[in-house]
Image (cartoon, rainbow, N blue to C red; front, side, top):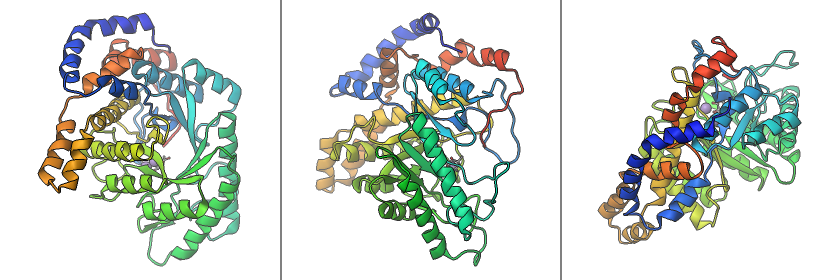
Length: 424
Ligand code: RM4
Ligand code: MN
Ligand code: MN
């Protein structure tokens, strides 16, 4: 389904006066508001192909209706998201959930919606039909070389699919680990993982990267072979310059200072990018910004500061992706909310008074440092985000426009009520 521009403009028109008032109010106090708008307008976050249907629990799946039945329909849904927010110009594919059978036509369809392909994700955490060896006891870390080889080959195949689509990165998340003490020799598991990743690394085209994602637990509950950023960083360092660490916000134990991890990885040029989501307890994959928007802001503070220190382009310097999926929301609305939350946190980080903060840090003026950060965090920057979207031809309020345009109703009519998208 295509968003009709004239209808979208009509909807925007009804809210424009209120928006103007709110925008002028916040813009008046911002230094170089045009520079902030410019940065917001080129900032994009990739949508995961596995988040377009309802999913995300082991216990049941309750289809919301009109779910995409194919990769083509997933691309159309991302097209809808991008048409509304003008900030989701890429899709990240999970193989084999979403195999691009005909790369040329898939690429063309994506281009029609103004989309391209971000990192491709491999999957060695589930057995596929007809697969020779099982991943029950892991994949790249497996004790049996034949299993490791099969998993390596799968990753190489995923790179090949990605090359056809002009992706530039392979994202690897392993569920490899152990459920019980004694089950695994940690050193061997790590060495096997490293050697397997080295083979995959060798298969990367010159302009490609491999992103190594970590996660502390689940599905294994005693150990995970790439369990934290230290383990991922160690692998990425040993692999070489094309390897870096991917931070999924939900993959940390409670209380972990994620912003500090981000800051140091960035300093070492080993931060690949993000899987954004939010969580209360673990890998909850909830809508970005729904639980702890302050943490998200603090992460963006480190990102803006650290990327500027390295002279990096905010929009293209790192991989920006969402990794969320769950049961009770319309997935498209959920993704629209997530992208907005990310842009809000980014905008807040952009308006921090950096010079004042640096001076406060130098003077050990702890109170002032907090005041400066929270001044930015407590500014309602939503009119800035809306203005950037509007100038790009998007919706003033993407979720509201999606509802007014009755997109889900159209999709249900087109696809039916009982469709189930591939994914978890
Ligand atoms: C994992 C991890 C991966 C994602 C899978 C579906 O927990 O976050 O990035 O590909 O879930
Ligand atoms: Mn992830
Ligand atoms: Mn996860």
